[in-house]
Length: 119
Image (cartoon, rainbow, N blue to C red; front, side, top):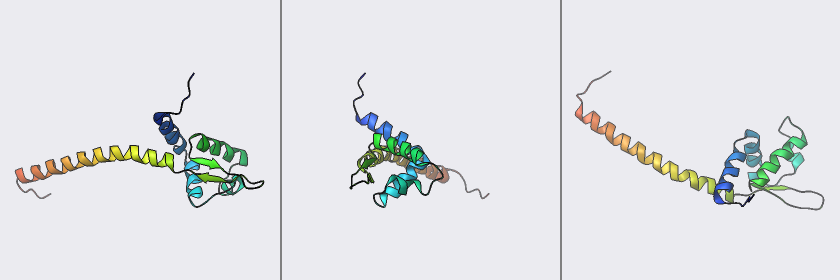
């Protein structure tokens, strides 16, 4: 089997990783700066191994990288996959925005054509 990282696979991995609230909270924390697994585990009522599993998902998605500082292995957020997801979503935002503008025009036409009726 070929497990090449394609843009589609990368996007799938990003959205899968973002689907969990704990992983999103970890990313929020890492957006403030690097942190160790122990630092990341503090606000959660879960074990360090459970946090490590979440970090592995984030690392496989390319959203988090692991550094090395003596005995520490601090984690860092990686912005590129989030930018790719944002770009992908932006295309759909533009489509919906266009649809809403068309709906606004239609509603405006209907208002002009119908007699004033106060409810």
